[in-house]
Length: 250
Image (cartoon, rainbow, N blue to C red; front, side, top):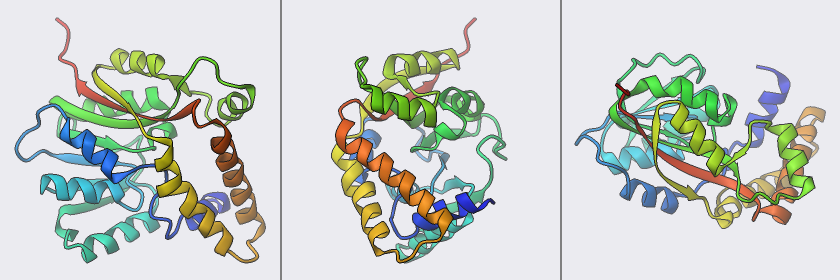
C-alpha cells in the first residue's frame, strides 16, 4: 500500500463514513426494493467502516458479507458490530472488487455505496452482474451529472479525476447493456453530503496538527473537492441506481 493510500485511510479514521450517504435515505430505498427471498444473501461491496453493512444486517436479520480492500476500515466496522451485538451477522472480507471470491449466482442483494468508481460504473456492472441470483437486486450509488449545463470548473475537475462520469441516462444505458433492468434512480440529497461526510471531515482536518507532506497533499485535495461541492452541488452528486438482474434474452 503506497503512502498516499495510507494517508487517505488515516484521514478517514473516526469520520464514520468514507463517502457521502445517509441512513434514513438508505432505509427509504430498502423499503421500496423489489421482492427478495425471506432470508436474502447480502453482499456490501466497498463497505468501508460499515455504515451500510450494519444497516443491512439490522434490516434483514441475516449475515452480510462486507467487502473492502482496507483492513483498517474492516477493523473499525467489526468494533461497531461488536458494540451493537451484530458481530455474528457481519462477515468481513478484505479483497479486490475486481477479483471477488464469491460464487456466481449466489447474491440476492448486492449493495455498494460510492465504490463502483474504482472499476468505473460500467466496469463494476460487468464484474458484479454474474454474482447475482435470478431476480437478484443491486443498489449501486455512482457520481453522476444532474444536468447537461455543467459549468466548466466542476466539469474540468471531475472529468480529470473520474473520466467515466456520466449523467443518469448514460448510466441507465450502461446498466441495461450489462444485463440489468433499471427499477429506479434516487439522488442523495446534498445536505447528506454535509451532515454525514464533509462536515465531519472538516472537523477531522481541523483537529490534525502538523500533517506530514503526503497527508497535507491529501487534505488539500479533499478541501478542493469540498469547496467545489459547496459551489456546484446542484450540478452533480450521487445517484442510487436500483437494478434487477434481467432474465437472459432468448
